[in-house]
Image (tube, rainbow, N blue to C red; front, side, top):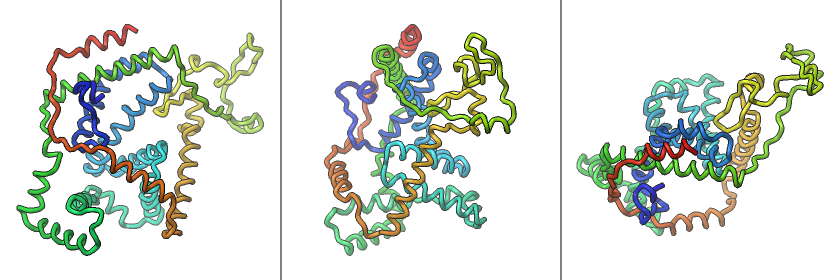
Length: 358
């Protein structure tokens, strides 16, 4: 997408600066709003489509809003839910340490709630004040001014020096304001609008390619069959309602015997589809995803407990060292200049017409 928007010769660095990441996420979300209606009317349960739809509907809005909107506004319940959603993303991509930190936070919250601890009321009332941004900024300055071979005494001295600058109004804050890459975010409203339209054209092209591949290379998705109560258990439950299918020799057919088209359906954000009756009967839960999340919680809680009980045991040290060396060898984004915008007549309307005519 980056090369499509700014030109084929422009390559996104492997470690882009925060303002560049934020720019791409914002225009991606805005572009999806422009084309989502047309795209959703053309595709359904293709694997590629579901993956991209989940990215634009769930992941990107979550990343953009969890701190900037939910945390800063003090919406504790929405923030708590978003923390669990973030954990599900880490679980899907097997991010080792990241799968434990959200569970620790959620465990603390549930423990305080169970024991009616007063700290929970304080957190709910003053959520924005529980921010570690000051610590993160301090740590960034510390890393910027030190090297790998810096010993503990030198780190302590430099930390005291940074703290001294913090007390000086012309030191720490001015230094941060003028050197931060966020201060170089200079795109105008007109620039953002143009970038959004070009990004929307890129999305339509991506989904057009998916639409074409659906008829040539379908990705098979294998799911376990949904289980239903046995006949002995049904006798003690309320009557679900039966009807006769004479041609099928089924005098007492149930709702789930019919194709989805014969009943209102519920398409969940995870991509699974249920009859509305079955979905409600399951407690408004996706049984496929529920088992996956429950197993993930059990596995990572057990791993966390083992690591806490054995703090001196170093696991997978070699893998972590290799991953760290790989990250250090990746080219960084040292360019703070914004990319030029080519103000050509937007072809978004034309791209929409071509996509809808497929």
